[in-house]
Image (cartoon, rainbow, N blue to C red):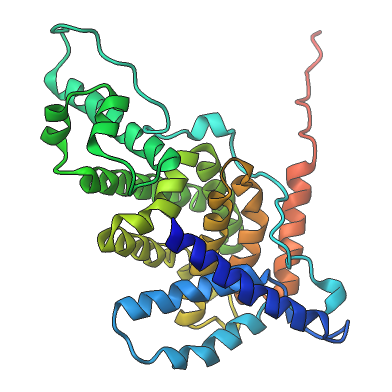
Length: 331
């Protein structure tokens, strides 16, 4: 927790310095239409990844990152994304998206119910996983013990150890299950429509709505995973790589497609938006971040103006009342 707080304070300090410098610029001067915290947090993620890999050519990122930021440039009066403000929730209802570990499964009847052993084991596993994510949210990974997990899950210690070697393995299982759920839901939404820009918009809505409906999962995937250890951090970085898949199709529709470093920066910044909303807990507005994420996603491919126009069009469609079905008169 302290490490994350120090990280957030450092990023906030740099962001404040950037914002002070921007405030002194001419009103009509072009500048990236993004909140400074999002940009700095995304770049922080990219640098941290390279440091963990012992890469030495970090300074070479500067030119490509500057080119990436230029894709978001707008004059002062045209900028609308400089504050991370929730707007519209997109997608299906939250209830329809709740994952298998967001709620505690019911305890099976005592004794020897006529239920297959495999089903009993799965019930116990889901109870353990739910207890794990709840405790991660309330106590944090470091303070949580196996005894805490078994008590909340209402299972014996030997039941836990039949399924997991230790609490780290239980957290790992939660993270892997969450990753599968996020990728499956986002990919289905992405391919449910035609055309890469609309696919990207639809995927952004699906991703944010899913995480909004599963706050425990969002916390363990985007916040607590950093406390679990190198393996969990590596899985976060693998998730970044997997999300690059959704950007690949955009290369074909762009006259000047962004570089791979720019695409990496897009994904890192999207994850930073989700992280920032998850960190504030119940006051977070993950589902309301879909338009902001779409802006991050689309502008380097379509241009800032074209991206904003598409987002505005989709928001108007979202707000428009559905037409009532025509009723045929009976004769």
